[in-house]
Image (cartoon, rainbow, N blue to C red; front, side, top):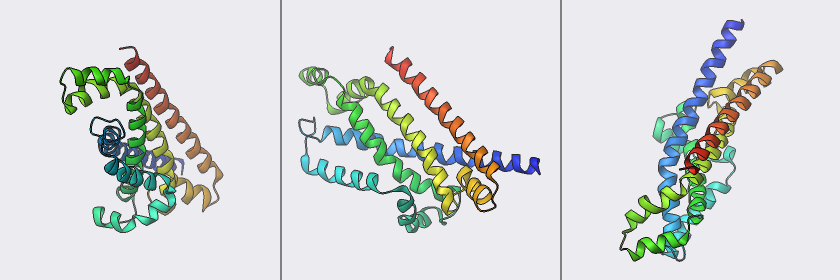
Length: 217
């Protein structure tokens, strides 16, 4: 019995890692350039375009303000189109990624706003291109803030992945609901919560350590 439960916990934890890892990486790949564009096209930005900025900002805000459980259901047709199913770990990655990308975009935009405006003006005065300003000035200077934002995102995704278990998304959330809640086994629910707490603590500690390392450079 305990061997079987242990295997289930290991499998569920692995599914959670896969969901959080893939959605976090893909979300960062989408959210990072989106955040840079939001910053560049804003008022007084290098590529100022308020119309484009407002449209992108409205889309980002709309997705961010949608409760994740509603987003899970709303994107089911798109999830089926992408992975061929609306149930399982692969299916949960789609809404997790959609939720992560705009969240990361706003955090990246906020981190870029902390960069000294004088550095950008100096780069412009020396004839730097937009690409050079982004990769040689903005991102290096904002890197600690970007990493801190990614840490927050990954932690949020841990909670979202547990929520995805409510619709059969797999992972620790699914295990907790099926065994801890539906089968009235509170010990299973308690173990799931403890594992999630420890996992979040590890992610947060690693993110804090990385931010300190980058800040000292």
